[in-house]
Image 1 (cartoon, rainbow, N blue to C red):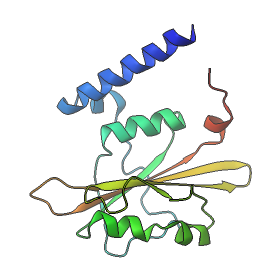
Image 2: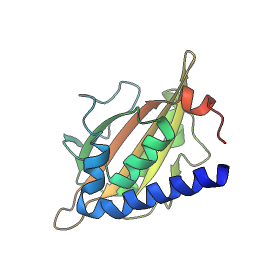
Image 3: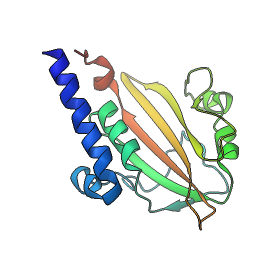
Length: 164
């Protein structure tokens, strides 16, 4: 029974990713960007960034929905600064001073990548487990901007729910 469930999940995710190119997946899952008006006070703002009305990339949105049960808040920014500079800004040490914990690197992927990366941090707020993902993505030409997506979720139930 467990293999059937995994197979169905794989097929569903594969179909969503294939549909993402034509926008069909976004119409099925909706948009999650802009669900908060300002960056949270415990998340440092990248100084050279300005708030933007951007759609969260579909693969990232699917991943976050899977990890959080679909309950997360998002805000997006753009900056002319390159992705490695933003990744370096969200260092483990900086985030630790604000109460966030991370794995040893804080960010996943090559810190010198010109394309971007993802940083994941967590913290306890009372009995809640809070997860913060910062997705950094270089825009396609002709734009020379970098997009920064901040997604925050209460993952208490997601972390406590046993997986089959």
